[in-house]
Image 1 (cartoon, rainbow, N blue to C red):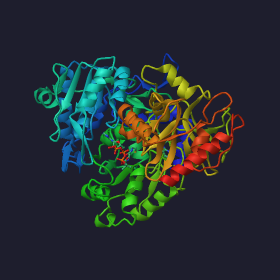
Image 2 (cartoon, helix red, strand yellow):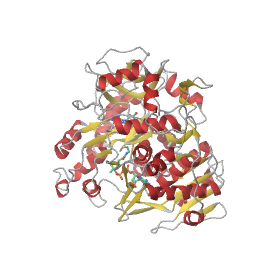
Image 3 (cartoon, rainbow, N blue to C red):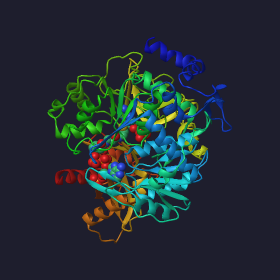
Length: 629
Ligand code: COA
Ligand code: AMP
């Protein structure tokens, strides 16, 4: 069948379509209702279905005779380790991890926070939670203790799993002090912190709260899987929203399992014999879906990479891994290739390796600039496919469905809609816009299986954030236009979310931190274009009247505050002192104009601006800053 027919079927007869697709997974009991509504009138997929995601990711492959097949390859240039785990190995590791979680009192529905580096135990822990019906919440290691504390208070986990530390290139990042700090800051008190000691850094354990992972693991019984409802939550993943508090995106078991298997097959076109590699982090949705669940549910081999695209040890690492493990399908963020391109623009390192196993290269997480796309196409000589999705969906929404039919790439576009996703463009008043016109990207609600059914304990915020803007549609937060051939072009976020090196961050979070400095009267943090990271934050600061400051000292303080409270990953490195900020007559800061000014784009001067001269003042400051750079 061709893409168009497949897509049309999914839109014209969604229930029939997703009923048929549900059969691609191994249910203990198939669903009784394909689509239904809950008590909040939110849609749920596959009610009545019984399954276990950990069973689908491990046991079913062993039952079908593939126990000795490699499930996971851990490649860690930072620790100089490469380890292979078969599905049989995975079963033991996961069952024993589940065993100790049970011994610590974790039951179905309990939350477990996982604050860990890119090591196999993180995947074992996720699958162990899935096995016993506990709800995991993986927190990205680059977030500071304050952010971890916020997540502890929201998720209220019984257990927090961590490691003594991670390695950022050759720099040791001790995790335990951050965990201790977070546990001190949080109002909710975690009962147990389980620490995996790594050989390059030892964490101090504080009994009785803290427990040693290895001790628990060695003595743990093996724990079988439980039968779960399709609508039971599998995990919570926190993502940046437009207010200081992160949103707890919920993923349920049934829809997710179908979406994972479906996307591996139809979007990525992966066969069970393939080696699939998503170079991302467990802390992001990509890491959940395409390092752990997608490839393992599908039954192929997944790669777990602990390193960076450059400097571990050089910009040839990706190509070395592709050669060593015969990677067939590779997925990462464009920023990673921009970093490689900067160090090896002619691809000389690439020439040292045999990458002929590679069939397709996927990119997502941020806009892919045309020059990086072209550079990669020339270098790899395989299809380079940009595709678009969000933490909320957990799987691609705009992409070539390479398992069905490919079509030519249009540079700058993420492709056409994936089955089940019906896109529209709307203007600020919520009116549908014609083809070719830019506006806000919305998607017909209900979204397909796998997408978030709700936010953790916050149905009101779910409705406000996504559903209230235009009735009947999910509001994506991205700007876009659709061309005459149906290709969708994402033009960037229309809210206060920025994308720094493929990491989704909120500028309002940063503003809150910057504004809390005793010398700051008011501030605006905006995303400015960056050659490698796509965007980086920049703070514009108005100092309190009568307060004497040294701008460089203030900048240093603010950088440290953002690092301490949000995390190094924010990459907040620049602040500029200004006399005043541009505002509307009603006092709203004109962030969009500031962004345009910083990025040297044309500004449509808002009619509501209080004093246009402010923009000239700020433009002069940007110019001075650029010269100083
Ligand atoms: N634990 C602790 N600190 C971390 C961390 C972690 N897990 N991840 C990142 N950090 C720190 C880094 O050490 C760095 O600190 P520094 O400012 O002291 O140097 C800071 O957070 C920013 O990290 P990062 O965003 O990784 O930037 P970088 O300059 O070190 O590397 C890239 C730039 C482009 C190579 C890197 O960001 C990258 O590989 N990006 C791909 C992202 C990705 O896979 N996204 C997923 C979507 S598909
Ligand atoms: P996250 O939830 O972290 O995956 O971030 C989702 C956001 O990243 C989207 O809302 C987009 O703004 C951006 N994004 C992801 N993929 C792409 C892409 N292929 N092109 C442009 N922007 C993207």
